[in-house]
Image 1 (tube, rainbow, N blue to C red):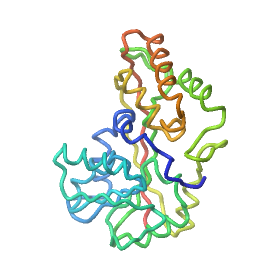
Image 2 (image 1 turned 45 degrees about the vertical axis):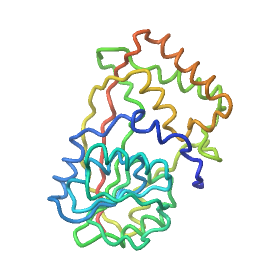
Image 3 (image 1 turned 120 degrees about the horizontal axis):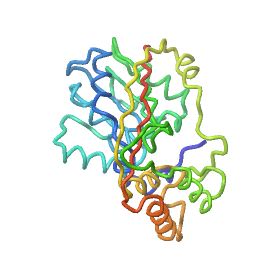
Image 4 (image 1 turned 30 degrees about the horizontal axis):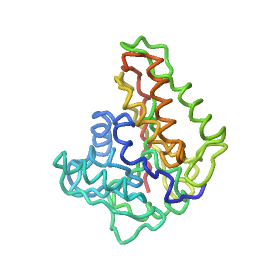
Amino acid sequence: MEWDSSLYSGSAAYYARGRMPYPAALAGAMAAELGLGGSGRLLDIGCGPGSLTLPLAGFFEEAIGLDADGDMLAEASRFAAETGARDIRWVHRRAEELPAGLGTFRLVTFAQSFHWLNRPAVAAAVRGMLADGGACAHVHATTQRGTETGDELPHPRPPHSSVAELVRRYLGPVRRAGLGRLPEGTASGEDEIYRAAGFTGPRRIEVPGRVVTRAVDDIVAGVFSLSSSAPHLFGDRLAEFETELRQLLHDANPSGVFSERTHEIAVDFWLP
């Protein structure tokens, strides 16, 4: 997979609503594991609209969110202003340009972003950007949809399988990603990449899932937040697709209210 500027084209406006937010406990658990107390600096790579940058920023003197998508950074800046977040800087760069004169950091994070990068080059650059006692955190999370467990829920689960089939009907059977395709999905094997770059570990913490309620607009936004179903991929059939998607969700539950349990989140801490 080679990154291109259309990867999330049109998705920024949908991302924060369509992705289930990280639980408040996540930032606290990460801070406790690393003994964070308001000093040092944070670098969140592939920060999107600040989904993790904003919850973590208060544990540092300064936070930097870095992303290659300018629209995502505009959303991040807007959310920061709305929440009164301070001492956050948004940097429009590709991770492959690091260190880019940004200095050193107590914590560097990758949250659902590492697989899009030139991983060996970026991991090596990040290791050289960590301050004494610093760490790199790889956040394993799935926030666009919940688990398929047999939990009893207050409302029906979203019909994710039917939604995926609808997307395939419009965009074809092979997963789309910007100008390219990912027939085998995104890359894995992160542990080998980090170790080859000289990191040791990992130390892992886990935060349990929780039950959330989602409206039709949330689920529609979730579809458009994905690189595999970003709005631009539908071309002049975008409105037609959205109409059919909303009808599918209405047929699944006319009340328009759904519930699901989020996935457990695991964080691997790698030390230089």
